[in-house]
Length: 185
Image 1 (cartoon, one colour):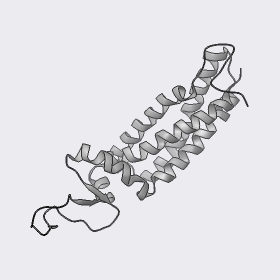
Image 2 (image 1 turned 135 degrees about the horizontal axis):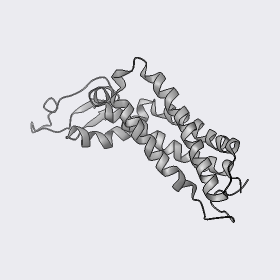
Image 3 (image 1 turned 180 degrees about the vertical axis):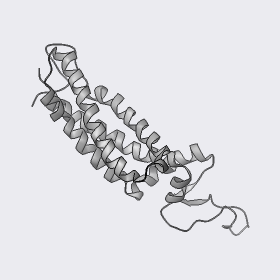
């Protein structure tokens, strides 16, 4: 298998640098899609079909462009073959991000930025207000515990960021693998 990061015919190609702009683009696309999730009747179907197919098309185009820039020739078949790892990785990334326990750490980081206060995100259905928990000195002791569902329902951008985080890294992973498959020179 050829090394995608070295090329005797032209400049060196770094597969991460090729995939990074695509990964950031998908992060932004995912966040924006979640802002409009109420506009779609079957939003999960849109996410599970649109994002992987878009990853296949855009990564194929990036592979063809990379082939032309580095080798002055193209092979569309190898470019599409090189995009398949991104397609599969995005489906795996969507699967991971659909597990609520995997979204909690990302939500815990980004929720304070969007909500404007520190929150403790839990999976539990029960919530506690800031004044309902007191310590022995009757002082406020805890930050409010919010459920992941309540935060994501109120702030859909947070759900988009959580999904986008995993999709971004899956695109990078798929691009690194796919670049070696799409190399033609």
